[in-house]
Length: 121
Image 1: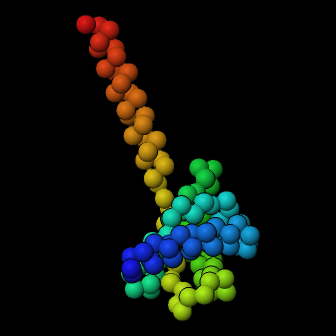
Image 2: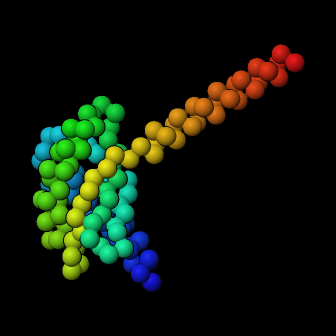
Image 3: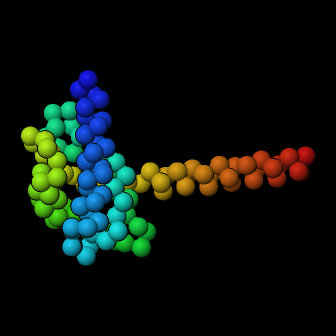
């Protein structure tokens, strides 16, 4: 039951954070980030917020902007959600998509190499 509650909270936080970052955060360093996931600790004290940063943006600068905006964002979450304690937010870059592209490229190269070997035989 607790696990299911945390999963629902993760999804609700992701939706609310997306809206707050898009509409209310004015820091130019933040830009157009995409919240890809939220992982709340079981005791609800902190939440890891995974964000996808556009390749055109400076990742360390964007993460610094998000860290600076975290208290404001946390306050806004408290206004939007009806939870007793809003977790501390820790923003992290999500490299899952980059990793998937890298694996896909490697698989494509392996298939091309295998096809070349089959043609030579």
